[in-house]
Length: 413
Image (cartoon, rainbow, N blue to C red; front, side, top):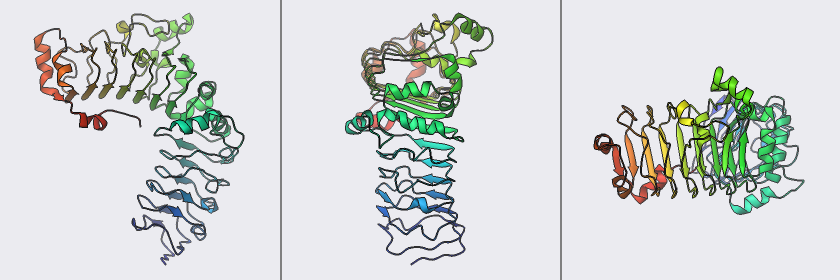
């Protein structure tokens, strides 16, 4: 038995431990980290004599699937259970009136009882993002049931989060067009979104955002869209003449994702382009894979009422550091004008056999570019404006080996 009565912080337990046969007593403990162990269970009674704990981090215990009576920690303010095997929250968070941070990233939570989240009256941050769900889990989330707010595409979960007075940061995966519509109809939810993953939204054929919506989602940092096989386009709708004139006259910042740093687009078979990214001036990483119909990344018309996109976007992707393109058999163009790309460091291209030209000149990526990784045959077949430009980029080329694919290409966050 380990008993330390006057310790304020306990950093970790024996990483080899599979469980606790005797309970530990730390009546003055405020911060507890139990991370990267082989624990499968934290048994009943373990937290009985830890009444002052405010911070509990159980992340990266990949086998942990039972965690009893965390809800007895009445003073708990921070709970991180990321990268565990926890599937349900009952017995863990109910009644934690002081809980302000709940982090469940890359955790296979399949069930949240109605009222459980809305009862966390002090909650400020809710994060349940990362990874992807399998087809059985998606079918579970799609059906309607009264005892699980993850059903129905997580619309009910969004409603409970919206009801919280102090919530200001949300990261989440959504699985239906209904839940996406709920998000886009709520000023409060939009203003809280930090990381958003739209997965298997099967009935969503178009994602259309008004400038006011984009302005409200000012804190969005990461966006992933995956397996939305009916989705054909994403656009910022600026067709309203008055709004368009205001934006042109004063500042386009009203219709920009000013904090959006990462975009991952995966397995969206009908998506044609990503021209809406002209509204993401701070984008640093763009990863696009397995989009069989995509012909261009940036087109000449953004679909929102403005043509001649290139005329206004010579500084497009000015902060982009990494570009990853994979499995895009119809892709012919990244964009139709030369890009300076002053921050670009790495480009990865695989299975993009129709892409024959890059939007480069001798100044592209100057002083920043470090690596272009792709198949040798693709590199040799590229068309250049002149041989001097090709020679200036040749030192950065590295042939792509198949074993490198999963190391260098982005498949989610």
